[in-house]
Image (cartoon, rainbow, N blue to C red; front, top):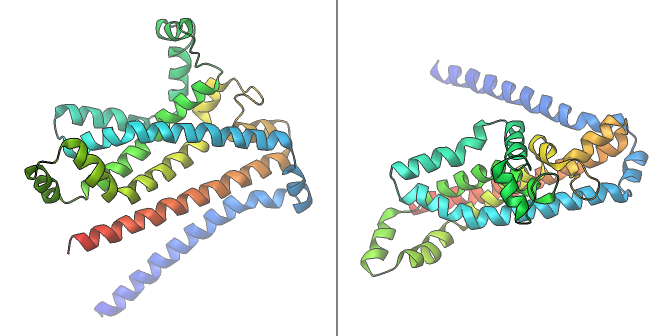
Length: 272
């Protein structure tokens, strides 16, 4: 009787999962039925399409480079330095996850504008964020940062603290512990964090549009290009760019899942 209930439960779970998976695939792949293969591949020859894609690649790689430099120290504090300050830092660094990207873009637009004292200060010193690639990098950094930090922090949390304590008793400095023990042991988690934050950055639209000004070849990223082409009724071009973005998302998610899986295997092996 108990075995029969388990089988019924498994069947229900599989049916629900299958229905969700099928619905998702239909919704995501349905856009390709809106155009022909000839028009799709013809749009891939469009230089403006690839300019927007390459701009997205360039800016997103700048974003993840900054994430790497800033995110590892922040993740280290959140994981190894438990205090009221680290608790507050955790809330602040995670806040963009619960804030609308549109609001974040609006906040940057207002704060970094010429009428705001903060924005005026930067503009007077030769650094403009509104309607420039720098502004896009800033908003994408704010939005993607929590993804990187949370993944890396989880990887740091899985490290055996006894190993860290033993290293300290043997005279290892904090720098040695971070660069020779923590980072090497968290390599998979760092790669997974970079992949996820890169995917989030390259696919960002709402916040990017608020500060970009939609200037062709300067601030018109791939997601914005999808909106522009759609508003003009050029669905084949929009579908071509959307298809590229979907492939990028699939690729980056695959990297995240792979290295996250390796981290799980490594941690389960070290805990035996």
